[in-house]
Image (cartoon, rainbow over all chains, first blue to last red; front, side, top):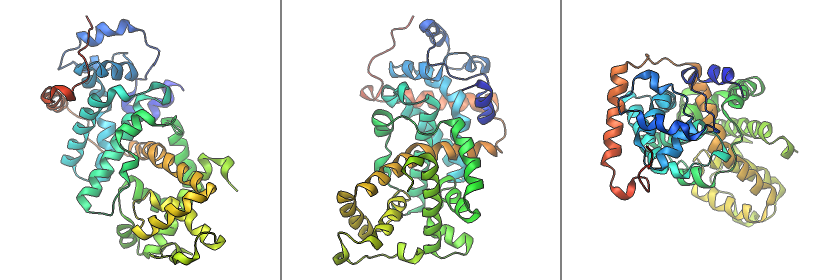
Length: 226
Length: 119
């Protein structure tokens, strides 16, 4: 996984690519980092995984550094789903408080810290959206942070694969299927809202969602395809 | 097809094994993770999952997709169009300050287990 490709995917993370094998010599660097670090410090070489390990020991400044690295990524996800800057800001704060509380659950053998942060951000934003919209239940019991952190299986799609997969899906799915998946998963719209937006029946939206998601499933788990 | 998937109630007497319904359960496995499944459908799906290995496997695949692949895809899509103004050092510092205040305010048992022994 090259740092160039990471940079393309997350331009903001340029020069901040993680190295899980970072030596503990970085510890003094984190310790030295004050509350209000100069922006250059946020680009220091301490890996995300190392910072989470530090946070698990109670080092708040490690969360401060992660905040500087990822607050924009988190806010972008939340802003899209919630379409409200204040709400997105609040989710962003909640995500990093949660990271501090749950850092001990992080298991670097299951995937990168950045993927974990994105997962938590996404599911929190969807929860909030559901709460605000009084939609039918989003099945969050399957995605609480304990589960994401402690029992999760190895990640099936990392950041690089996600970008490729997104392009592939846009080619493989019908426009309507892709639109339905994007509106639902990326923008947080309920099926009913999608039906209203697109002038389709609810059954048609549901069908497009299922067909699109099944294509996605087939591309991630090809051997299971009949 | 779509209207059948969207049907609110499937007659219970058609269970447990009906190849036509199997297709609908396959669809319900996916719909479950949208949160837009009715209580009746969920009840029927649970019964089906108890004895249909292929649906159960599929159900777990959708769970993994929704748990980790969808967030990664959503982030990739969000990063394509990043319209946000670059955060000023000042506002970033203020946001970080708020975060640190919240971390400081956590009750002791909520804080990480033990203090860092660094330095």
